[in-house]
Length: 178
Image 1 (spheres, rainbow, N blue to C red):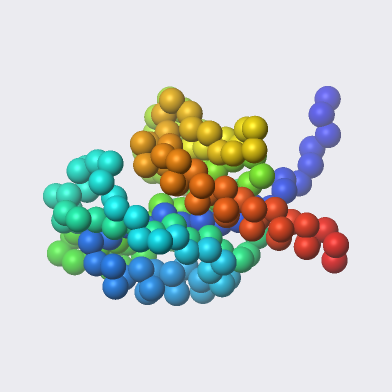
Image 2 (cartoon, rainbow, N blue to C red; image 1 turned 180 degrees about the horizontal axis):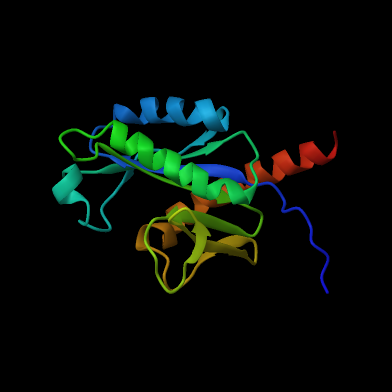
């Protein structure tokens, strides 16, 4: 029988897209109130791998990826997703979201994203939330799975998450030397 251990803490991330780039700063500030200071902010990335959100959110969507200082327990992911969904609802105009906030976390071995959508490769985490291992860290870099969305599978996104992983690694090291 294996010995039950407390999971290693993880670094929370948020992948945010919108048609109004002015919202990025407001979203970052709101997320920082719960997750600590933002330690990583990507450049503005085009959100052009799907038109799934166009009817609701408009065209010419842009994305930014943020990572935050606080280390959290992976079991907090469902609560974070419920909270981010409530932010999206609060900022909706006439029932249409102005911003989409996909929360997840980085560990040394993977990028996990939260979802409200069930699928064969997602595990139920509770409270209507599923978790998906979107990228895995192998051979010194993040690698996609067959189900990984094309944007997350791109070399640009994998590099971003690799940079966040390095920050996460440094946080773990500094925590262990305290």
